[in-house]
Structure formats: structure tokens, C-alpha cells
Length: 137
Image (cartoon, rainbow, N blue to C red; front, side, top):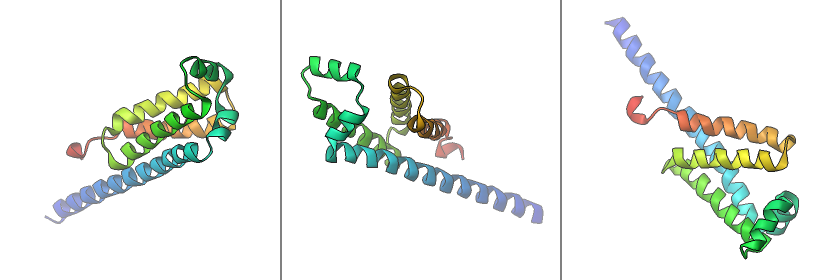
């Protein structure tokens, strides 16, 4: 009977650890996406000048958006990702969308110190995508 209690207690402890890990992962990622999304509204010119590749700026202008308007749309997208991650509503969908977004940043900007950070974000987002449902814990 003592062994049975130990296994049950150990299992409960493991599940709680996974839940806290999941929460910490979600809070960290959500803060990153919310921070950058909100900053796109506060400093759209900076983001457009520093991070919008000329090829994308040309496409944006051809469809009738200003560079700042594109940054606002990008900010909305990042805020939605952060909100999804913190609330867990459509979390796998928006985590996957964020992975695609970060891979596109790599494609358009090439390898640099920012991309190294993004590789870490991609790894964390993939962990969210693969995380087991609560029903399976």
C-alpha cells in the first residue's frame, strides 16, 4: 500500500510539474509576442526602417498599404499570437503561425544575432504545438 501511495504521489507531482512548466513556457512566449506586437504600434517607423525588407516594402506599397500600416498589421498579428498563447485558445494554430512567421524572418533577413533568438522561440513554440492535451496528463 505504501508503494501505491508513492506512485500516485509521484504521478501527481509530475503532472503538477508539467502544468507549471507549461504555464511558464506560455507566459514567457506570450510576453515576447505581446511586447513586440505592442511596440509595433508605439514605434512603427523604427520597425519599418530597421526590419522591413525592401522587397516586402515594395509589395506592401503595391497593394496600397503604407509601411507603418503594414507594421500595425504585423503588430496585431503578434498580439493575437501572444493572446492565444496566454489564453490557450487556438494555441496550436497560432503557435504554428508564429513558427512560419519566424522562419519567414530568417528567409528574408538571413542568419544574424536576432535569428539565433528566433531559433529559441521556434523551439519553444514547437514545444507548445507538441505539448500533450490536459486530457492526456
